[in-house]
Image 1 (tube, rainbow, N blue to C red):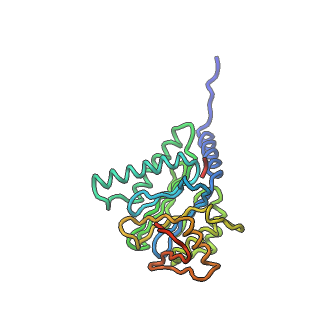
Image 2: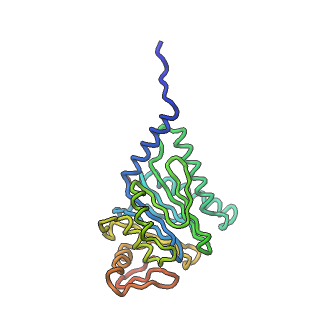
Image 3: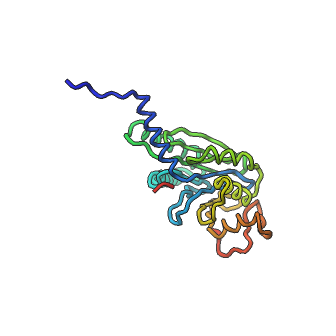
Amino acid sequence: MNMPFYVAPEQVMKDRADYARKGIARGRSLVALAYAGGIALCAENPSSTLNKISEIYDRIAFAGVGKYNEFDQLRIAGVRHADLKGYSYSRADVDARSLANQYAQILGDIFTHKLKPMEVEILVAEIGESADEDQMFHILYDGTVDDGNRYMVLGGEAEGISERLAESYETQMSAEAALRCAAAALAGPDRLPPEALEAALLSRSQARRSFKRLSTEEIAAILGAAEAPGGQDGPDGEPQAAATSGDPAEQL
């Protein structure tokens, strides 16, 4: 009689965690940090069509690192959950904390019960009426939730990027300074071209919809403002780019 094949639960969990971490490490990192007027999000992303940073609801943003099709499924699920809750109850009832809990349950169930875990890390960020009310939640592949109110780093190079951020981050930076700080931390000793970056702001100076995606031209103007005079911050620390035109309005 053949003996049944047995693997210790601890080994199964370890193998799944190693598999997920390796997949996430192949992606490019992402940074979210609080500034004087809201929250800035910046990611290394050479694709012009696949977004790692998106809007979930009025004052809530979503970002993901890892396997694109997997974290985009989570983004869509979050949009549907927020829309249904806002329609059934009130728009004020939709918040980042409840979304983070939903995501944690989904990822935790998949990690525990499915053969293959999701190769993703995601971020849910929400701005409040003041900086003290801002929230950021980092959800790992196994459903673990980490909350923070200054900055967060997702992706395989998180440790090195966090060290660089700790040296340059200041709590009351303008939006331009925050994006330059994030881009420098992502690049390390090198310099990333604007075309390789994706950036967005959750801004308290906006109306109901606080999310604003920045174009490549705006990112180039912001990064160039540190070297070329003329770029100044607008009201509430928002970027006011000089020499720009237009409206700012498989592993990633």
